[in-house]
Length: 104
Image 1 (tube, rainbow, N blue to C red):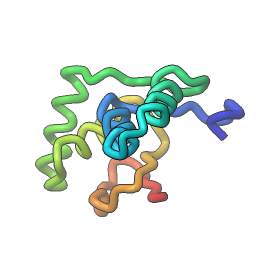
Image 2 (spheres, helix red, strand yellow):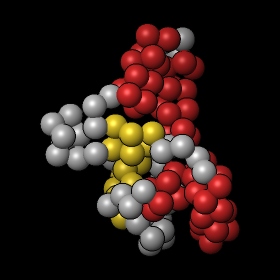
Image 3 (cartoon, rainbow, N blue to C red):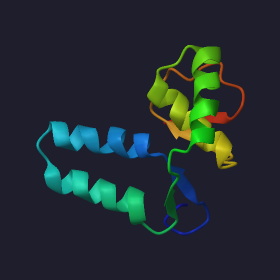
């Protein structure tokens, strides 16, 4: 749906770091670069820079749900951008009620 333009994807810098870490850990620079290109400049993909406002919201979310800071930043980014949902492989987001969490 993102490729067809039906949905706009918003990612945080944390998301990029987490996604490219897997291929980099396996020594696959080509795949890491491919992921980076799609996430940072692909059609219908937008990188939301980390701002002071998002950081403050992330701190509140981190405390409320006892999350790791990178997870709280991703949730805060989704909330700040008015996203309809956060798509994640992470299972630590149970109980978060500020935004819909879609596990894949």
